Image (cartoon, rainbow, N blue to C red; front, side, top):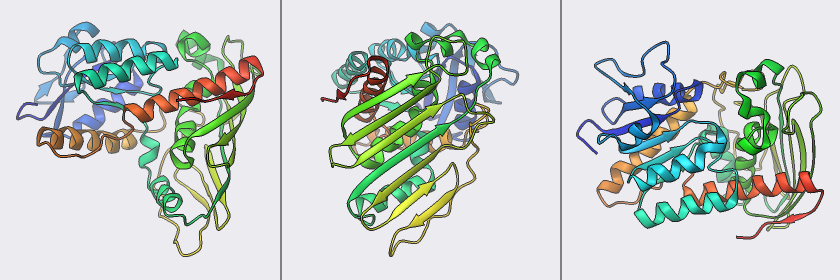
Length: 344
């Protein structure tokens, strides 16, 4: 890293890429956007005094001032670009999910370990105040024995949303309500409740003329013995904030997006929820606050790594792989109508 901070290259300057650029702008002095690929945004990304270069994706990865490559391309390309960046000796920040296939995710993990490089999957919802508090309550045993966990992502996307980017309509490229919209809450549920032993699911395309499913309902059995339910959809207008609920032997919690709906945890006061915008009806309504929070931790991890200390990277490679494993198990269960057992 240079004295100007961590140099970042963004592959894929769409709406999500701009959120990363805004986050990096707020980390001036610690991180800077060096180069990007994709369309030219209305307002140039990067610092006003040092605007970023627009290059082809391969040239972004190869740029000598780029320490970290951020992948904001369609989901089906994430693993390939991650591998290319790792092979070039760059750290990787990748939008959800890391890959669409467990083998591809494991290949990225092997490459990162072999080269001693960092990979962080964007999982910004883990950093929201209410989820941080719930994680601590679970880990401290404040909810008691976990018995039931549920997450609902009941969103709406119109036909224009799918026409605007063809990959959103196809299973092969990571489209569908589970892999594209539900991924963050599936990641949250696994992070909060621990490993999943097996899943069953049903899925269907109920409201759109697309190849991918637009509605999935899954049941989970966690290794702890707790049971879980996951529902995801883009077929429920006008769209509703995603929720997550945990029920234990001592207490229960229900969270919305930026909202504590129920907090019955003896001896533990409810957290103050942040003002988190929901992507229930508009995918870009979420804002960049979550990306800024994760980038702040990523930069801290890279800074302390240079000093040979041990600040962990948020949602690192092992976490990213396990989230892919669970997503793929649910997808397979829904497509084939079978129980799928997860194995490491």
